[in-house]
Image (cartoon, rainbow, N blue to C red; front, side, top):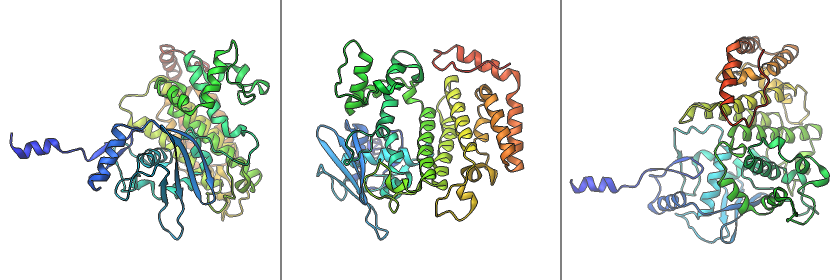
Length: 438
């Protein structure tokens, strides 16, 4: 073998994959920056996010490794790029610190709705994907109160006297998912005496240890210790509820709609929400119709991407979860045919979420994705028929109405329900909530 061949064998790959399974092209970076990225991705630091907040015009993320670090993403103004700093003091002009690379990779994972797994992202010299755009702008358009859920990182308000329930509700929900998986139960059925009772809320009381109740004790540990939560999640199974991507997207849509509904009922919500510490109307995108629609459309895109880009076909439980999420999203949008006074919309469509996504033009909203999952969707036939009736009453483009009608006809085929029932019965039965089709 020639020396030239040996040199080629020693060349490092130009594309690297991050722990969050995003691919980056780095061959255009200086060698120091390439080495830094490879080092972080090959041996990722053991980091747990503690909290995040908005301080004036700066997003701050606090994380722990062996010591607590604080990453700050500051808006520079005048069209300049964000200022990225970390309290660790490491890194430099050609080599961003590991905390910045780690955090910005996770920001990209949460905010990029159009990411194609087959096309690597382009790593910038500052340690984040070029496709992310300006990090501060990406967060402000996504909104920190939505982003924090995906990062498993509560938003804190230092002015609050005690912990805000909504602030911690996502961590409580995910802890319930982790614990229920140990028993092979659905999260909704696990320990209602703890999670569905205000009197015994895990957020109440200072004691972590509860005698004769290991579930409650472990729950309090999951809520109180970020590293323990991350460790518990890291050993969970791929098909556990907390790792179900479709369930997570459904929860994201619910979060978006809660914020949207609160803003719709009181536009001042955008500037007085308890999950931020300063006036945000001029910093974060207001939670109006276009903002909510962008998130909802992004979630349906991700569902379609999950279906098409898997290395293996979806398991029956996965198709069931995907269909359940799509029907939930569709029903939620159809139920929001109300005009919202946002003060900035220029057309009625921008005042009405239903009109924006369904009523004004045909974009195959949710129907295209449901057509990819006919067997699983057939288990929701009655719900879809009710939604179809609502759309007929509210009005929609004729082409969309006909596509929906065609989908229902396809789902009424008897073989659909029977086939999926046989498949689901072969699994562990975690989500056997569906009625058999008649």
